[in-house]
Amino acid sequence: MSSRANDFDGLADLFMSGGGARRGDASASVGGGTSGAGSASSASASPRVLLVGNVPTLAGIWIAQYADQCARADGPVALIRLDGAATRGEIYRSEGRALPSDGSAWLERASAFARRWIVCLDSLSDAAVVVDAGGEIVLLSGTDETAMAGARRTIESLCAASAARGSALVLGLALVGCSHDAAELAVQSLVEWARSKSIAVRLTLAAHAQRVDRVESSGPVPLSVLGALDAPSAIEMVAMAMRGNPSRRSERDVPRLRIDDPPRVEGIGSDAPKPAWPAAKSSNAPTLSPTVPAAAPIDPPAAAAAAAPVAASAVISDASVLASLFPELQALAFQCPDAPSVVLAADARGLHLLACENAAADLRIGAAWARANWALLCAAVPACAASSAITEHLLLSDAAHAVGLHRSGVLLHAAVDFDVGGRVVRRRIDLNNEQSAAFAR
Image (tube, rainbow, N blue to C red; front, side, top):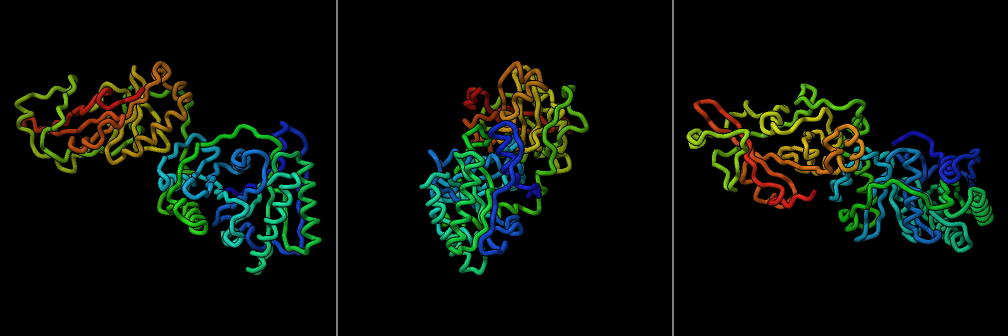
């Protein structure tokens, strides 16, 4: 997590008005004590809980405003809205990273770079569940009379749950649809109300938004893996996702695409990506009526005497496969940071992405990344600017593996080894074309 201060007020002033002096924070404590549900130490291990109260118009647009403000201040934010079967997740300010559409893969992917996690719940949710979540708590609310009445009810229930656990409540308020002055007055009125009721709570103005503005989001992804759980279990799973897989390096340290000069297109260089391409696993000829590229003809007598697959030591393990099996393409000198196993190449038809069959998922991630960074790619690669096509290629070790991949929009190829006069020759067999693959330009 980022250690940067959550300077939401100063950010909001700049975001909403384009400048101006920063105002002081409106905060107050009632009943003393700062430890408990909202402590900073617990926030690092648990997601922030955003309780949605009464807000002007649609709640979704104000939730997005809050998440985007957090992302502007702290870096990429993973927002998860727990809503039963409609549970979904979004990344704000993802910096061009591609996200998978599968829920479990989305959580794993987000754990690599998200700086903050926010779980969104209705303010009528069980207060004990919210307090037991262990992270910061923020109440999203308007400032009109009805909204303030709802905020007081929420504060009372949260304070009761915190008192039952022997701690004082620390609650941030994100007030929307109002000016900064109105937000500060609303906080002060709640502080005075809590003092008059002898309620032990510390209230702070965490954020405010006067109007709806443009946000930067990766788009919602259904999270059925969380929607099937109750709220405590779902929050616990989110906390696990925050920690991620400790065995893999965090993508916070992986460099993003930087193109300072036009890429080299002479061929594969020693500094180019080096995917591990598998050798053929079967000596049988492909059964899908493939056609051999004219650039690499196979002598019929030699083809008839095809031998068993070559030894493992001869498996192609560097990017020279692109030059030998795809001579019509020119390799690019950079790679997709989200899918380093995918080779990028270009020709007159546009951009090409190539991967071996054990990196099929990375191929789709690479394609999504290319679309997200298309303007940058066009500036670096003239062929991309001349043609808007993104062609995906998958190289298989066995042609039989292509049966379940047809009509998937991917061009399929098989790498087949032949024994030609005692010399092993590897050839590419095209298993489909753009028409039979239902390829969409």
